Length: 394
Figure 1 (tube, one colour):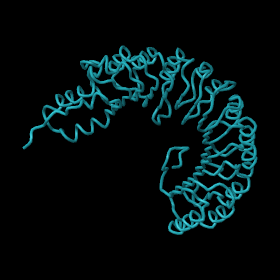
Figure 2 (cartoon, one colour):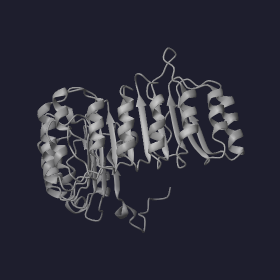
Figure 3 (cartoon, helix red, strand yellow):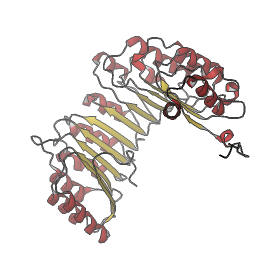
């Protein structure tokens, strides 16, 4: 049997992205049950973390308890770390060690924030950064997190108020942190609960540089004011709402977002109420080029795809030819055929469709292929889930 020969070239010295979740799976699958597993894990980690490597991106899984910062050479290897993704309930001594070494993190993503009872290490890590630009606080579906945990995370960002441009947060802010982040370009508030006392922290906040806005279940008056206060710079809007007060929402988008390029609507109730007033938005937003709609329809509450397709074919601006249609119940073959026939003479379509219930799938495929051969469709996909990222089609 041939003996192992060390490679002539040090490939690992060029390694920049380390996913410890994946590495743990590999180690466990290969060496599970061996008595010397901790030694094996230590030796493998030292291959990636040493004085000859310089990691830029690091992902640490939940329940990871290895003191990475104590590995010989870690101070050099991690000194230029650019992005870190980890669980907030990670051993805080690991994060305190990172705070002493890592000062240049630009992108920080924390999950399980509300499971964190001791966040001293995280707060220290945040405070020590010099270039923090992109921050994500995710509570991982917990509906009622600690007020004090949330408050401490928000307050830790205030030192970086001039630098943070991208913020994702899974709750309505409990402080006035948004008023401090004057240079925000992207704001994503994916809140899953309604704490009415905290809405005051969003009212009358101005975002002069904001380009991307993603919000979930906002009261319509709060949402309208928020869009007004973006000063016309929004190019992407993603809204998940109950369909109520669509007229005022679309009116403010049409008036305040002349440069809108992408729009996503997710409706979980009153799913047909927006269609009659949607045409005004299409007329006012002439730079719109991509539209996504995701409806929670069912057998008892069917979405009126036919009416929407008529509005889209009639009033879509010239740049709008990229669509994604998501639905539990799907739509009828004849509705899609009417839409495609009405699209003749416009830019070729890029369409992505996903249904939980697929009706006449083979006929759908044949229909789309027919219009593709005619040059009216450039790309299409039919699937049971989201295929590409939000505003990516191919």
